[in-house]
Image (cartoon, rainbow, N blue to C red; front, side, top):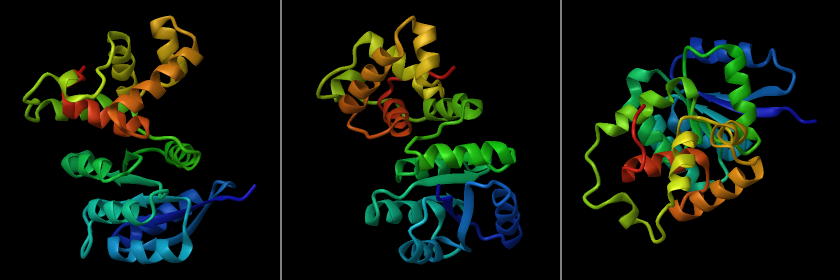
Length: 220
């Protein structure tokens, strides 16, 4: 099996080198390249087409949000994980809207980082349960929608779909949602497919963001 190829993007050389050393301890992970800012990341991505990009936010020339947006516009299959501190929360939300498939805090363990990369490389999206509540709390501070949330959807969500969406946004997987709501996992999977279609998004992270913007979620 080919290793997952990673592009590390951060303006701090010491951090890039530390991440490379950490990630290359894993047999199934390989660092394809490093970039010191978003512009260099775009150039490296075009040449190497890595499987996953670890993207910092605050960088010179082109920051992580704009780099993520450009990556996803030019290469829609690009898989980006925002790697930042929670103090950069506003930037993180912008990064997720730009198309990042998730985010991690820079104080995560090496194992958590490796597992997140594997999950995103396999087609998943990532909202860490440990910070999901803080993310939702931040969205709650934003201006509420002018109209009732469901009025803004072509087809409104049912009460059950809203229950599942709330658990999804808190980071629960299909098995956990099924256990909490006493449903079969297959039923949960079908519900989630319907929820994504109604919200007009492609993955769980974008669903949570869209739902928060519409006022469909409550913090806590």
